[in-house]
Image (tube, rainbow, N blue to C red; front, side, top):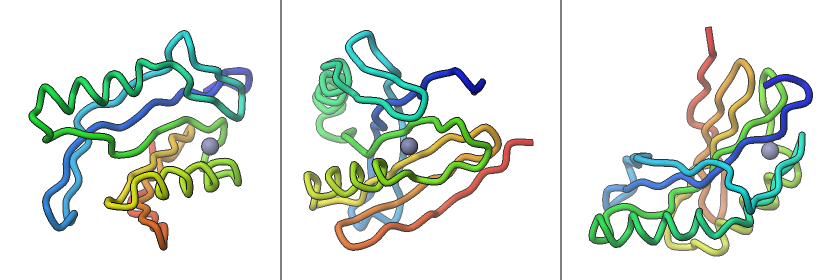
Length: 129
Ligand SMILES: [Zn+2]
């Protein structure tokens, strides 16, 4: 991202095995016209994201569903903001039956977080070479 680029974001759609030891991310959505994107924050307002989740769920007979969200940060090494952490708390409260995955894409590193109601864990850091 260049300094003036606005954040990019979307939902992650995928599947998990029964004990959640493996989670697969199959698809993601990207920003839509009805969304709001600023340099360091975004609001996912467009109905496209929920519609896509519902469509994938139906077409896969319930195999694919909402896994979490991804977004970019204008930082080389991204760290979750307070807004991110609060948002992830809300997502976890709305989905108490499952672990969620949150991805933050920085300029040089991608962070992947696994979250359930109680805790959050960073499971992977990928350095862009
Ligand atoms: Zn963020």
